[in-house]
Image (tube, rainbow, N blue to C red; front, side, top):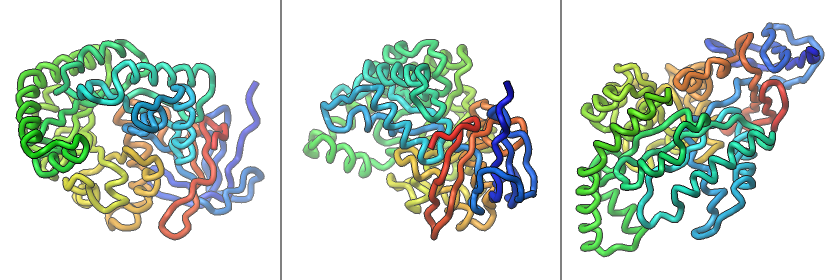
Amino acid sequence: MTATPAIFKNARLVLPDTDMQGTLVVQDGRIADISATTSAPGHDCDGDFLLPGLIELHTDHLETHYAPRPKVRWNPVAAVQAHDAQIACAGITTVFDALRVGMDEDADLRAPDMRKLADAIETGLAENRLRSDHFIHLRCEVSAPDVLDSYALFHKDPKVRLISLMDHTPGQRQFVSLDAYRIYYQGKKGFSDEQMDAFIEARKTRAGNIAPDNRQALAKEAQALGVAIASHDDATIEHVEEAIALNTRIAEFPTTLEAAKASRDAGMSVLMGAPNVVRGGSHSGNVSARELAEADCLDILSSDYIPASLIQAAFQLAAEVEAISLADAVAKITFNPAKAIGLGDRGSLQTGLRADLVQVKMIGDVPIVRGVWREGRRVA
């Protein structure tokens, strides 16, 4: 049977190229009609914005629910549910949960923990426990000795739709500045200066021995399975050329304007952190997302470690960067990530697409999510 249409009236609809006051009709989980009329019966949006459901490609947020304290492990299904609730209430209707592959020897979480979380995501989806649509993004640390063995735990998992190739070796990419690396790791591990020097040299040697082969092996596996590849923290033209050779689709968090421009010119989508936008700069001292936006080198925003930052960053970009309209900014958290990852059925308010919707009210400069629908069904 065909369900009764759901009508969203008196809404400020954020369309692909503009925004307008009007009405949106949902039929059988899809957008059936968009018009300028405001007199139809139905859900009154009170003049609030109505956006497509947000699409998040890289969030590290799940781990904090599973391991809220060192050595503490929560029930993985309950952890996924708690994470999902926060994601949905931030307006995110499609999320790629980032799970680590390749760990430090003394990391609190290990590869089996990541597999437990993946299983919990799939259980949550199968049992209709979750509000948002979930996929898996594997964050592959190519300089870690166990990265290939850890990746094997996810081999041919259909929920894995994206991998990022990461290398946090000191002296490059995110940690071009050894001062920043020292501050991070000495604070984390309590090393003396001499211990830190030895640690840095050991990491450099290890990466030189294994990272190039691991990067190639993971890319080859992803290509064979049709899994999208993202580069991570590219800083130089050489990094970008390496990414191009691996058929990389997404440049995650480039650390320099030079790398971002080269990635864009090569046809990659450039992704930056929404917290970078909200805070006004990178917490690691790298290029700011706003600088990339002003240079027309920013395609996608990711909430990274703060789910609520995604929608706030979009409205902030629209307000603060003259060349970016609200429709342009919203595309960076909806249509652009959908296109980059190959999800052609969502990400825009257009007839025929999924009715993933977010009602947003602006008070001051902080948006309020007032309602979230996935395929026409209210989830938050």
